[in-house]
Length: 67
Image 1 (cartoon, rainbow, N blue to C red):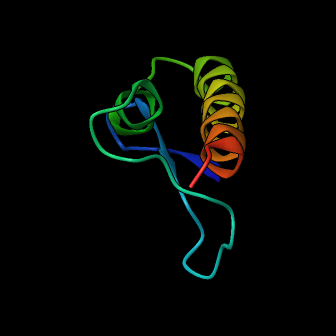
Image 2 (cartoon, rainbow, N blue to C red):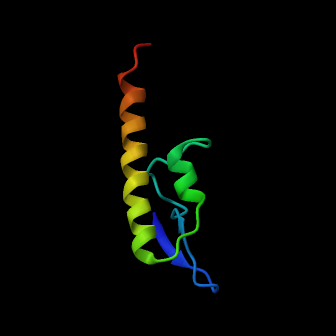
């Protein structure tokens, strides 16, 4: 994941094309954070950390569920 700046000055989050890190699922808090625009790089970086935490927690829960 990385943050980039639009010409209007807002910041967005994106994934590298070949990234193997899990991506946020639609209709989750992590996905909403991923789709948002941010006023500063600091805000975008904080959102990326929150996304990583939410996605890893979600992934961990998925593996712990009984089949």
